[in-house]
Image (cartoon, rainbow, N blue to C red; front, top):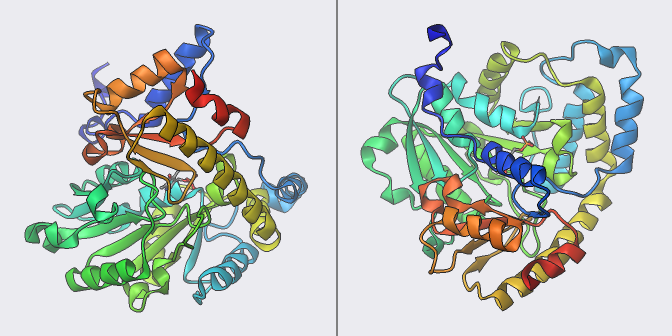
Length: 383
Ligand SMILES: Cc1ncc(COP(=O)(O)O)c(C=O)c1O
């Protein structure tokens, strides 16, 4: 049917990386092949018990069975405000500077629809979370892929962005702790970012989904930086912090006008977050601080085990500074990250993510997600 042909917009989308990997995994399962899945950032650790209880109790309340408020329940927004203040020493207005989301991806992807006009550029990090590219494409923006290179600690070099792009850029996406490189951003880098973006009038969309998955250095919020609240929106997620990926809840915080734009888009697309999920989120923030501590310990032990195995297996350019990922250069005998991940699947029974799936500057690397237990990780490189 001619009319069912995908729009020009949709045709510009590359296949969604994880959907492609899912297809590969289903194929292996159908053939009865046993494999270890280190591809997707979906933690195996159960969400906090109190959170699950709050969800179940909340589901039976009639009030929660109705359409939810677009702006999120006041009780949740107040919990977010308190958590933010405690964690980052940043004061936010719970009515105007906090917006609950159906997962941070939802907000990250809808955000440019509120601000991008024809001819505007959106700057995305490369390698980077694939959602940013989708966000830019949906809004009709032109994309500038900004390299994150190992020799610059996977931080961007703003001065290398061509002047015409700086002048036409509406939004820049940044993400630290970084997926996939695991790099962290210092306060000095965040200050430099705010200075650069203020100078060129670029909105900062700062993705802080992994703010709680760190080992040595504690990550910052861009909203800690003076002047940031004029130009920045920051995205947070319950998915990684409380292993609640399936619940679909996150939030945006920051500049009031940026949030109002995102809310206007959302009001025309979704109808709020299930009240019981919001209540579960509130309980997570208010009552589950020790859960996060424990989770960090689990990921740190896994990381140490995996890194030992990698060194033994001959990898020599490995990055694992934060998040539950390990980013590594592929052995030089492989021509591409795709070729190397094919080898890992067929010869080692390991599903990992090829770096090229995160953008052109991800080529030559591979990402492992440490979302399986220590016993399995101990044996990964034995085969
Ligand atoms: C960097 C980054 N941002 C955002 C997300 C989306 O998370 P959520 O589950 O909150 O939509 C992910 C998920 O993997 C991610 O890696």
